[in-house]
Length: 222
Ligand code: CDP
Image (cartoon, rainbow, N blue to C red; front, side):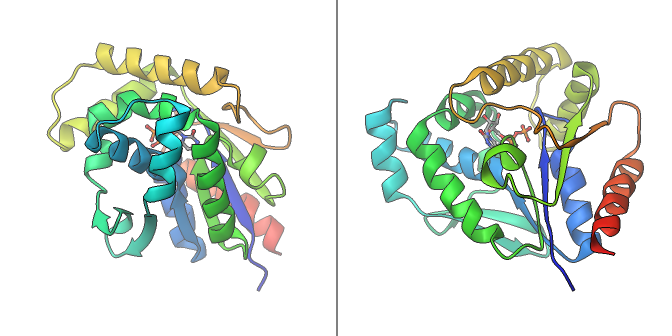
């Protein structure tokens, strides 16, 4: 049976990873969270105490190994063989990830790895530039959006469950700063591909948004 590439892009907290995970599970596809890769590079920068500039980042990127592995706990992210799936969600990583992922060499290396993983299809990949840059030929492109309030509430819940103490106002500010940075960077800015289907997830359930995507995917697979 034909295996397609499903690209899911959108701003922070729009529901990409939850949606992509379920869609992948239902189709028997691999789920790839590309944000986790940029977060792992950022964690390496923090741990090695390096400045965010081209020179330093180029060295880091050439000397680290990032792997995404599927397990019964979902996708796990490894940095130099160590499982960093929890650490990459830390607020200090979130704060620094946008400037790190705006660097050209970082993007070049990550995109190369993402293309390799997805080249045979059968993947649901989420990120910011999947439909525009990584796989412009993806058969199905989804662009998820949601109101800033809905996105902040979701992120607040996630962070509280992980034991981080924060407020909805603080998260709203972080999310809009990150969206601004990601949308205005020079290389591969966050934007909707012209052939992407936009879904606003502010007022629909996860079940509704995943069913819509499965419906589009099945039409393509028929
Ligand atoms: O889950 P959340 O919306 O917080 O973000 P993420 O998907 O984990 O991505 C974290 C950051 O990585 C984003 O804010 C972008 O700066 C960057 N990113 C990117 O530049 N390109 C991608 N394909 C994925 C993430």
